[in-house]
Image (cartoon, rainbow, N blue to C red; front, side, top):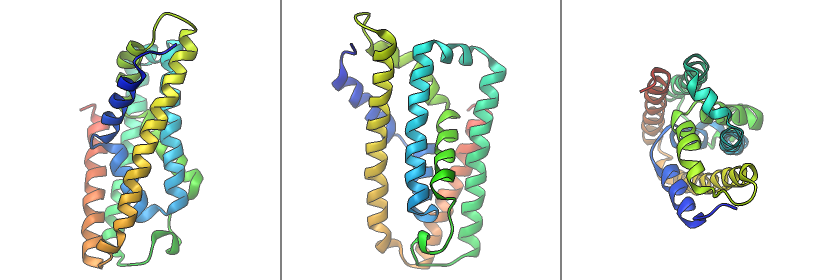
Length: 207
């Protein structure tokens, strides 16, 4: 059975709270993706954590990280997705002025598109892979089924991260009234787009 669960929860929470691609992606979905796309992104991101932990339990993540070509393809794919989203967000900020909620604008890829975006972004995140292969096993004891214990910790990892992102996106959504002015909303969208673009380039480059 997994031990040190409280420490594990704190560790994964702090990891989720660190500024990064997932946070920028969630904020982008609040501003422009609409509620279905946001929910899909949350689910896709959580699924990525489950896949990483399952791969770690099966020893597949070690093989992936040991294969420069396979891991580079996965990392670059994740980076390209972020850069595309960054460009789209910047283009929207520069060409569209609207104070209506995103879901009323008819934009957004829906739940399925958000899910795929969240999943690919998570799987293309080197930090998630490193955490799964090097940190996650440290919280599993040799007593009991190691595979199931590792997967269970992965599910907890996904739950903690999803809880934080739900809180973050709720706060951003509640604060929409404060940024409803077109100029302010455009500035926030441009900042989010630039961050996504920069993070995508950094992920693709392996920085």
